[in-house]
Image 1 (cartoon, helix red, strand yellow):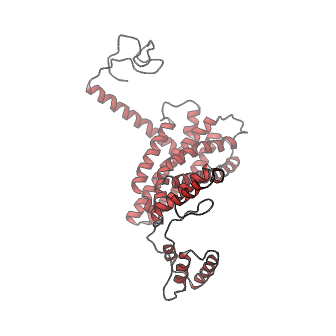
Image 2 (cartoon, helix red, strand yellow; image 1 turned 180 degrees about the vertical axis):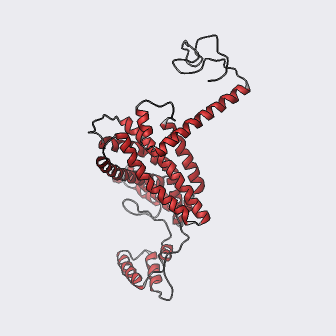
Image 3 (spheres, helix red, strand yellow; image 1 turned 45 degrees about the vertical axis):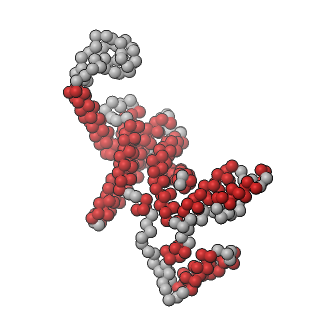
Length: 359
């Protein structure tokens, strides 16, 4: 509570309700004089921060060491001692991605510096047979002949990276007849009768493809790095979009439970699980960075331990929150992870395509 002087007037300055006491019973605003000193503003700010810290650390402790406890407390209506789960989700996810993006760059995720091992004689012969088949199908594509000459030169060692350099151009396949550029595609489409032109989706896809091919044709590596960069910045949206899918899977798994669970109940459990996952991921990212800096194997051991903790924590959270036996919980834990993985792969592919089309 602040130390501001209480107003003589009883109408709430925020919502206009007649106040009975120091606080408005409708919106909760304190009925004090709006003008306050700098010291009053400072102490109010300090009190808010320490109040947040107290709730935050209490919530964090119970989240980490009492799996499922916070979700159960929330469902029982005991909420004042803890941070709101949505606010904490926003806070932890923002901190995680802020640190993650400051430590990891797209070039770190796509490593082009390490050369692969030279191909064996058997691998070269196998690849030569494949090249002959490709040349038989298309004798106009120059890189096929360049690769064949490279493989036939037995005086030099050849690696997969050497072969990739021959094809180091971006050439994403389009729908329908292949054209050399976007301008040529648009020219042909304009010359065709309206009924024979590509539909809106085909035109949209081909436009994106030809723009990307034209922009990155001679620099496939730059294209891959750009896609990774856009995808990483879309990752927060992907994880947020996966929340309702995860909650829906839980809803279906516990649809026949004796205790009635609403979709919102599963949603709160999911949010708390995601918050824990962000904290654990942030910890592993920091440990991995320490490993890069020091080169000590010790940090990798901690990362492995953290990875093992994640499924154990989820299983224990399901046990405590839903209150079912070990056997049922384990089966539902396996099903949850399987269908959760499938939904995440679906969203991953969808967001990867969206990332590619944002170039």
